[in-house]
Length: 321
Image 1 (tube, rainbow, N blue to C red):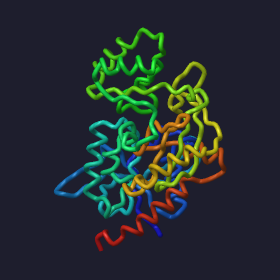
Image 2 (cartoon, rainbow, N blue to C red):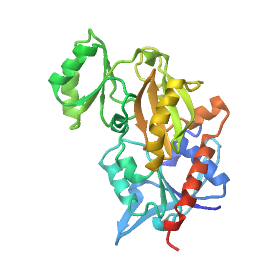
Image 3 (cartoon, rainbow, N blue to C red):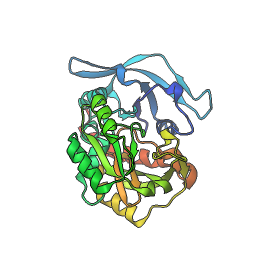
Image 4 (spheres, one colour):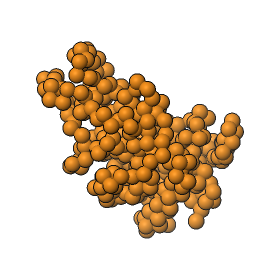
């Protein structure tokens, strides 16, 4: 099977080939004989009920400083592609949401991974609220009195933007911290959305586990360990990768959410677990597969492509002849 694969991502020039999950997916697709086309989200063009992208044929290789070659730019009708990988990084803003609306015009005739409709409907900190019994005590609001009451009840809390990513804007407010009021004023000035407040989980000092699910099934995990004096374990915030096995509780969480992910066409998902609690479900551009591969000696990108190809075969009847 040779497929035409268009990859909607950020500029490939600056990626870290030892950590970037999209790069690993591109390498695996190329190994399988699929043709790759690179484009940026801003290269999308909707005209006369057709969705196009200004793409460039792409070759990739694991060579530092020489990891890609892009061919001559060409306008591609995305309805003629077989697969579109939607892999640009957040923030999950109106530009991101607009891209999901545009890609909805071609899916599933062209298989978009992850399903753009359900990417749009599954912001990472909100989607998790639909699953009972898995979250830490959580408050989502703009009401200052509710926030102060929550802080009085749990004392040690985390405050973060509802649509943040990569650990940006995450604050640990300790019981004796006098800055909460100023912090709320700052959030109100910076964001129109509600704020998310959660009970602080001291287990974060042992790590924030990223678990990858492929078509709803756990494929592996990596323990992201925060640096000294840091409350955030995200790799973007300097977290270190540690080998781990999935606990019974973590497998229960995966079993609770896995069917919903598969039903929604969310083939490649990364979840974040601290202690016994699920804190986020990442469906936009999950990371972590290269770190897990190195620690566990597996190839998650191959599992993802197996799932994509199965889904493609299952949807072929919907494609134009």
